[in-house]
Length: 321
Image 1 (cartoon, rainbow, N blue to C red):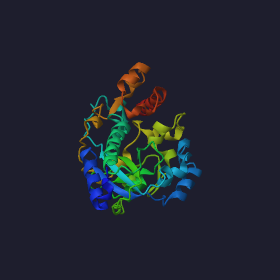
Image 2 (cartoon, rainbow, N blue to C red):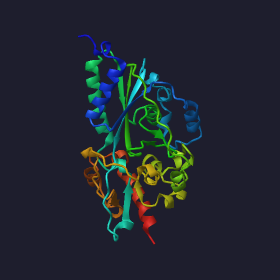
Image 3 (cartoon, rainbow, N blue to C red):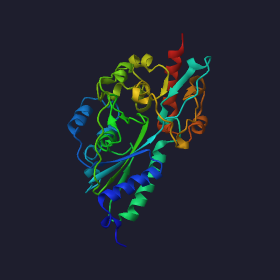
């Protein structure tokens, strides 16, 4: 069988890949060059300065993280995709609001890793049929890939001042995935930065984690503190955590580009907790069986029950008069 890659122009192949990605349910798709990160030295210094907190895994496989060609030998292109995970939330009753711990929107549905991986693998399988000589590696955020920089290079959106990828139509409620490939695909134009003079995300962050535009000290971020940090949370952050039980969306909630965010279309990403929150008094009563049942197929199982209860105690303390 003669590979189709030999009979299709690069532009025609690119169009077919984008059509297939959208057919599989990805909302956005673009191509980036598989080049070494332009921010490699910044990443090294960011890690050396302790901005990653206890996330020591970010230092592992660093050469692969900053260079897609080290992750896949001979890589020339990165197919970047994104899915919208924004769904409306139901209001919490006034009498219950004080005891409800909020959950970051990305974790309200089924585990996005599995959803995106399945679709990426389907795209890879299809790609092998039309370009059998191409080599590929699919990646979600658990792989050593600088996904936001690549998404920015692919034209999916720009990296905002809150360090999230922002698309002018969808906003920043985006789950990202990549396929690194040896195919030479024409890269898309990066999108211009539309943050302008806005500093709402910086001003709204209660822990000052956005130290300056486009720079995040993850060790101060509520998402890091409630998910990645497994020990006791430093006392200085307890009050700023407020009512966040798992993760934080403040810098996205205040972003003007999210004010008219469309509703997602993937049913498995719909919130299992309609209000986007849980009663922390109930969480503190959970046993392991309840924990597993309530969070089955959820990204919230990234943290174990003792850590979730730690967070619940902080939210409950913050709710106390």
